[in-house]
Length: 484
Image (tube, rainbow, N blue to C red; front, top):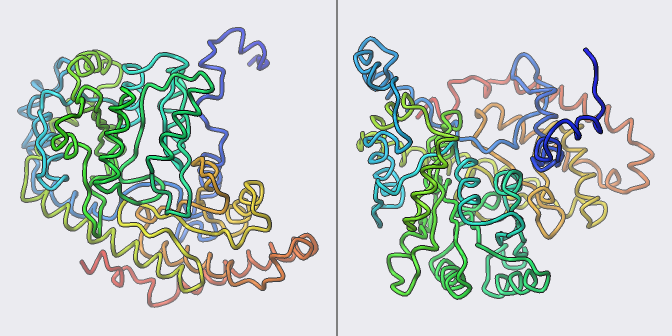
């Protein structure tokens, strides 16, 4: 095979194909690559990298599998459901199956505590939340225009909204002194700064519950946000894909509640992104939803959805599942309880070795504060610490700089994508690392003892993992999920 130089590739291919807009070169994705090259497995690779960078909800698959077994007609690939095969397999328009849109609208209502209603005719499908965000960006902005985004924010937004659309993201800087809350002052300052830079702001993107913080926007903050976008006549895109992951008070408040209450609100500016990837744990199904209060946006987004539809087989299955209200109520309650237990176990274990986390009550992750472990309070210092955690401690946690955090030393830790045994091993590893002699955190001492320390940590983790694997606690019957 003849190899082609990068310069020749750039001449042969489009600018989108050859630029780095995907963001794959960030530390966020580098951590995923480290895991892919050396994935942890309880028996096959107990010294590998534990994946704590993937926000995935794997705690309730036993409930899902039980429902699937008990409802074979929901699938067209079973003896019981095969009679519907032709009707589902033939061409369907991009509006989606009516029963699917109705079921999704009802599920969105249930997740939001039945405080609001959603019109099934405003449900627009897309290939996951990624496709939903890009679809809205194409509908609302032109290349060069920008959306305000409070920091820290999900690194994938750089790919989802910017890569193919040419849209920019402009940071609304939030700080740890007030737990990274979105304030009117921060919004106004960001908007004014963009104006001074001749950047046209077309909207504000918020993530509620927040990824990576795991926190909720309260009603007053949501009111301030809606008032702000109305005063500037810009769009509000609300990413609510973690709405059903709330496991403690206060409850989740959707922007749809605020819109119904604020009579003076221009509904044409309000758009919701939803998905079944996080709340149900179905990222592989690629079910994304755009719900817009703007008729023109609904119309054009539905046409654009031709490029990323949800398969009718998936729609058929989910329409049946989401319409089973007894099951859905049980699932939401049980998922909330299990997420709360897992988050509590993790954060308590970290607190016992002096690691604090931002107080949170939602999401599949928490925001870990390792500022005291930095050799220097810079983002270079943060990345240096992160490389040690990845390469020596063998944990893929995501550094705050990849989330555009304004302060170094924060890390996102995902807790719902692993079993209890893996969680315990992860806690042992980070505990051992944190409890190392303080001298090892001294720069000169680190340089002098680097090779010895790597060997000690590696051998110690192998011993800890071996001890854990042979301990009574390793028995699957001791898992709280199994006991449940």
